[in-house]
Structure formats: structure tokens, C-alpha cells
Length: 452
Image (cartoon, rainbow, N blue to C red; front, top):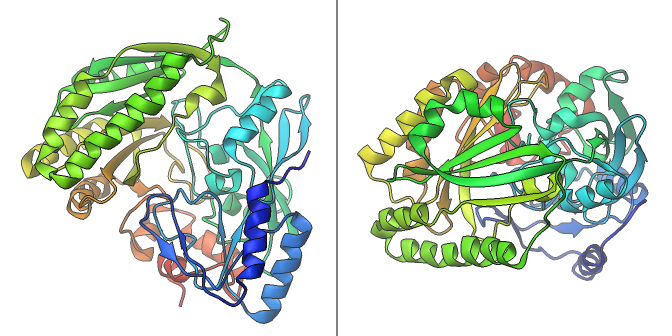
């Protein structure tokens, strides 16, 4: 089944109407802006390959955009920006083999509903579902659960559009080196035209939210990780409280969304929080008070539904974010140091610190390569000063062997990253062989990879 969106068709028409003129693009948070010569939205894989062949002949440079949820300049381009919004849909589902083949632009939320109709699901997801599957894989997007890897570990095969416009199939059996590089590639090897995912039988989860003492979460983190299928918590700065989330498989019937639950998620958690955040932006010293208000407002909740409907939550309030992967054994020390630093430096921050947990993998550029991991994310409301806060926290992450999430803000360089990833040079070798002219590189990636 292949689908396309009317918005993609409109985008294509607009691109044709504005050919030759610079167009403006910005990401979700507003941290990255670009004025590409051309923004195009192919409506099929065939059109996509033909466009790339033409760009190759012309010596053009191409970046691909999904939903714009990366905070770094991964897709920033002054030449060609390709949207995959027109290349969406599930091509095939093999329930017996436990696989689904999906076009690269397919949005995670749509994918979840389509898979559910066939009785299957992705085994885990992150906390937003508006991304395209290609973008989520490329940046190493993850959820939480000590027994689960990142979304990229669900990938059993990929079809890439190479820099010469050809389609290249890769998997553990076919072009295995390319496959290990392509599972997390930050869009530097080619365009992900389609993905073959490992899927599991559709499952229901019991989702519970509770207010817990942050010390309780930290002191019992190993037990909570093992006793719950999925566990995460959000510490509210300048308070002793955290919002803890527990998800566990259940045979109970789905309760589904209710009017109060939707009102709470959209109006209270987002609308009221936006208003409080605006107060903090206008009067930064109010952040402590707002954080304490947020902590006091944490209420217990419970819901049962199919897994893909519970992993994600609406994100209406816009922010900047930095997130690092740490070896799991360093989690407690690092988080306690972050807490102490916030108290000592008195940063104007009211957004919670998010803590999640992921199983190790063997993907070359995955932050979870070779180690069971904890992810710690810090946020700052859009429009507020974030650099001193992020810099102080990043210094802590670096002391604990931190690897940055590829889609989140960081200041790592090619030299520092090469020391963090055992297969860094292998990835560079594969990238250079697939794209020797650097069609898929922009200035940011050239700097990141140390490419002249």
C-alpha cells in the first residue's frame, strides 16, 4: 500500500512555481534556518531516483528533510532540499516473517495505525511520533526500556538511493558493511527510500504516571528498569519531585482515550505549560517558581491502549534540546552532578530533565554502540538563553564518556567523535565510497566528519 499526502502535492506545486527563487525553511524549534535554491517533494521512489540522477549530472548538493525535528543543522542546505512527504506508505507486511517494508517518508503515527490494522506493531518507539521513519532511523531515535534498543535495531533491511541515483539494497546478508553504516547514517550515505522493519504482534500496555521523589527514582533505578517493560522519569529542577512513567504489557482491554485525558494532554500539559513558559521567557527569575508549580501539579494517571498510542505524547510547547547517551553505570553519578551544578550555577531553567534507558547495539554510529545506556536530556524553552546551561551540562556528559544524540544540540568535533566511536573510520570509508563527491554533505556534516 503506498500513499501520498495532499500537502506533499501542494509542496511540489509550490516548488515548481518558485523555481529559481530562494525559499525559506526552518526546523521545528527554530534553531536552524535555511534558504535552499530548491525544495522538492518527489511523489514516488522512481521520481526520487530520477531527480538524484539529474542532480548528480549537474554537480548539485542534496539534503533530505523529514519532519524537521532535529535541533542540529543536519538538513541545512543552500542548494537542494528534498522532502520525503510524498514517499509514504507501507509496501508489504509479512506477519509470518515478522517484517514490514515501509517507504522512507512514512510518519511514525500513521505507521503505527497501519500496522495495528494487520495485528502487528513496532517493538518500541520514542516519545514523539511525528517523525518520518527514515529520519528517526538516521538520527538514532530511541524510546526507553532496558530490554529494547533504538529504533535502528528494528531495521533488518534498507534500500538507499545512492549519489548516482541507483537503488542499493543492504542487510546483514547483503552488503553487510554498508548496512551497519546505514542503520544510523545522519543522511550521509544516501536517501533511505524504504526500510524493512522487524515487527512484533500488536500489544497493549498499561501506562501509569506517578509523582515520585527524584531520590527514590535514582536509588531504585536498576530495580525499576528491570521490573517495568518501559520506565522513564522527568526531574523538575529546584524540586525534590519527578514525574515517573511506567509502561507494562497487559492483557486487559484498552480503555482508549477519554475527553478528560485528551484535555489534560493538550490543554493542561501543553497550553498551561506554554503560558507558564512565556512568563519564564519574559521574567527568567520566575523559572524556579514555575518548576515548583509544575512539580506540585503532577498527578497520577492510568491508561490502557495499544503500544504505539502510549509511547508518544503531544509536544506543542517548543524548546531547544541537548541529549547525551552515557554508559548505564555512570547514570547516577552524572545525574547527581547535573543536579548539583544547576543548584550551584542557578540557571534559569524550568523544563524537566528527562531520563531514559536503552539496550546496547552493534550499529557503527549508534550512541548505544557496545554499551547498555542511559540517555539524559536537558531542554530550554524556545526564546530563552540556553547556551551557558547546555555548556555546563555537556561538560559533565563528556566526563562520563557521553555520546551526543545526533539530532540534538552538542559541540562535539570530528576529533572528539572519532575517539568515541570504534567504527568511526569504517563509516568514513563507506561514506566516501558511496558518495565520493559529497553530494549528500552540507557544511555541518563536512565539519562533523572532518571532510575538506
